[in-house]
Length: 257
Image 1 (cartoon, rainbow, N blue to C red):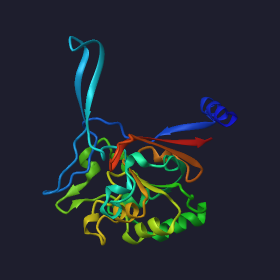
Image 2 (cartoon, rainbow, N blue to C red):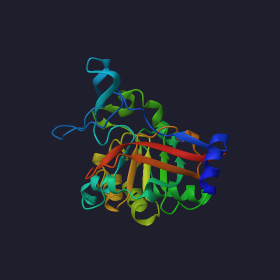
Image 3 (cartoon, rainbow, N blue to C red):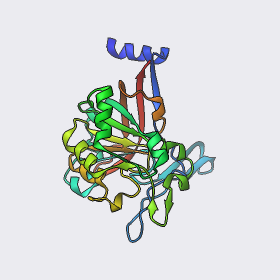
Image 4 (cartoon, rainbow, N blue to C red):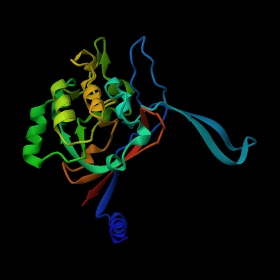
């Protein structure tokens, strides 16, 4: 297997860098909080079973309590009503989980306007500079929001009008879902949609459009500043939860130096 041997050699030498894009899971990890009367997911929690004591003298282990959509996680098509008959998270194709990835950077815009929405023309301008979006690949949307990830209040950025976080316009979400060759879209925020997405038409356009087109989402990503605009490979490792609408995931990027 000369290709795999070469990859291992490159990773060991540093000519291929492995970047972890995952938010660590702990009780303080921010989660999406919906208003009443909607049901909410669980905060991540460890429940100790034994720790080198009379419950288990030679071993330490825990039960974990979490939701499918906690921390860095993969959204499957069946997560949204528009994709209700689509794939569940256990059915994610390997070509989706290991795929080319590109990054669009809108940090400056999101710093000026926390409700900034990505538009079709932004992506078209990116493509004019960097080339076409990758067939069967991922588009990651860098906004700088990951810098808030250790402070749940700053991450939610909520006031009496709700959360204020960057996202995608309805027209752009429809275009990404229907008219581009990408298989997935990833963000640094708690969800693929903007904080003010409930007031958009349609509401939650990224979920509605992407899931309805049998495409996938990634959220709460970190370290996107370490990725080039093009040329990296994304590796997504969700739990294969049968019937699941999503899963916490370890997400890595391979970058050729």
